[in-house]
Image (cartoon, rainbow, N blue to C red; front, side):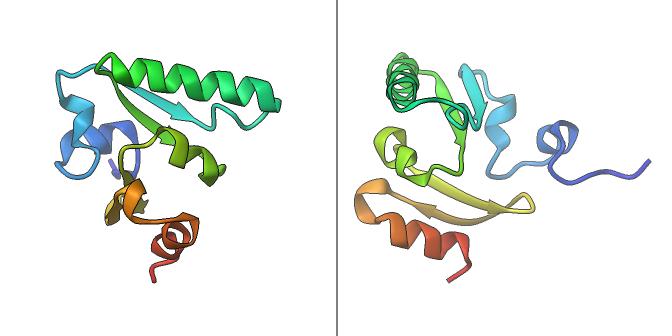
Length: 105
């Protein structure tokens, strides 16, 4: 049986940047939660993410709205095909720096 990179089974089998999948700390994975929301709803969703995170829940936020990340993230992890390419601190970078890391620069 062929193993597909990036699948749930793949993430639970190998240690790496997404090893949190098997940790005991509660976690929440959100894939594009604000994509179809109006501005006010985006604000409410980001506040909910902050509240959940403040309660000790690990939040993985997958989004194309990079500006949202700067409001809620305590770190950025840039992955490509399941490989950790960069880890950045929001207070040490800006949108341009994040995009450069995503582009492999």
